[in-house]
Length: 166
Length: 122
Image (cartoon, rainbow over all chains, first blue to last red):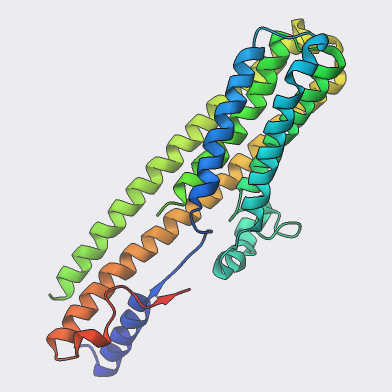
């Protein structure tokens, strides 16, 4: 037979637990997702145009395209970085078990708002590609390598941002 | 509604959320694994017989990029896991709250005093 006090304690805890929802990641931002989709399409178009290679003399034709892409992705990165991270998520990311992967000493939101880091990687690729194009042109295998650096980073940002729709 | 119904609803909600979460994480890991492996292969090929053969700076840049992408992928998995935990918890809380609410209203507590969804968000 279960003592009445225990029953009441269990019921009270059930009530408290039932009354609390949690938020462990930022809210979905449709404007950010739309911006990522559009800018990704522009970037993939540029990669498609350059995949057979391009000499340095052609760089001036492409310079405004690089500038537009870098500006748009940087704006999206700032947008992702500026949004509010739920306080509970910040507290949980300082737990020892996630600290090693998340490096919370340098960025407390590294694992609960990952898109800024992924977009920083996208930007690093595009900047280096622009500089390489300008300095010595782009060989097809180098374009493929820049694309290979771009693809995982944009896939991370798109997957995570779409997953926030809940 | 009795405790068995509440438990059944909680388990069903939990199974749904965990199943979806696992599937999303599994697809993501597989996709990232393929992309990173292909990039590693392309770097090695280009270093051996392509444009990276005599370009140490670009070779170093692509290696660092590969490492950074791998670290970011791991952090994204942590974030997707946190989202799954969040959704699983909220699904359980929703089912539990629904059960508690119907028991309390059945016992005579006015329904307008009890919100339809759990009232606290941490």
